[in-house]
Length: 454
Image 1 (cartoon, helix red, strand yellow):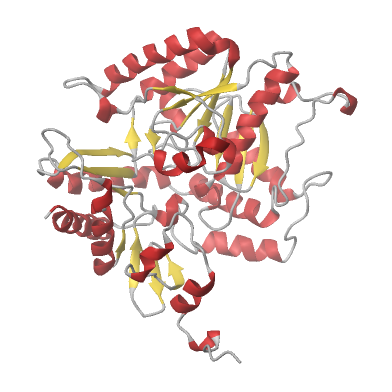
Image 2: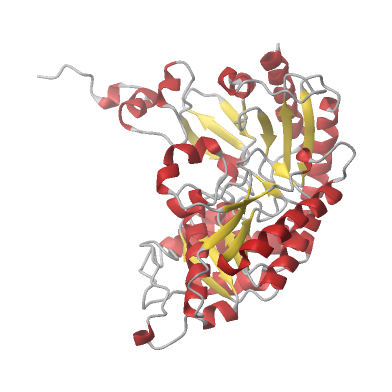
């Protein structure tokens, strides 16, 4: 007979480590790295079972925009749960799905007129890739089977999304399963030549893209990009001129433009959508994360009438887009998204973010000349610090030294969740954060950096 203690007699962490396999985690790490057991959350703070609290400086993987358990979103969810929880969206509809689609079309870049729902960011990218490919097939151009992606870009971890991702940490192991994209050099301003402005670097990279299109446009369905910030690739930032120029090239060479705004949408870059800063409309706009305010999984792909028309035919024509997810257009998630958009509409969120982002930038200025900081960069409410062994040569710390992990561990000591991307320490806080809380997270990061490079 087993003598193992009953689960209820173990701590939550011990129970977890016995049964749960966590995402993006080497589980062996938790032999030495603490697992946080969170019992509740409010605003910008997570409250642990041991009585400690932690400032959520990364918005719970960039999903939470207004703070945890925002009263308006909570009230909307409670009301919706009394009406309708979920139905399949094939052959049926419901008010939250229709109203959300109408609202998204209203606030999105002009010309986007159709909404296809999925349930997470990777799935949204899969939808856009398949829809673009299928569009060209329906148009009698089946040779358009390839995609152009940017070096250093990240678009998710399902097979299609990972195929257009260029982050070795995620991609290398699964390379035999993936299709090969055409990689274009990133417009990342950090990679610019000495004395080259972000705009000039963008212009040079657009010439590279033109050359690729001249060779490959006949076989390319779409170009996919994270506008303004390549997030999981290290918070790499580029000038809006690149996005503007890319739209022009896509028009010239007749290929689709997919804007992956899963991480950068909903105010992160200073505007509701990053594409607004380039004054362009993509052919496909992928949204998720902040769409529901960080409460429930939901994603959406917005496209235009021309794309929709390519699939609109008698069933016997075989042109239907037969992609589906069981929880497509979930009523509860759609209601949370509607409340999220209502907050953006009724409150001066973006104006307030300008003040908060300016304060964040002022506090980060202290690191501008640090011997182990090669770059301090910021776009709206996203800021990042590039840690290096030597700022003059930009020599990197070996990845195996896990300097960023040292910053993370110090953050926990200070009650701040900082989850660096390798040796890039970044901030992406919820918009309810105060200037005092910004001060705390920056102070914790600076102290952590000093420990990490010692």
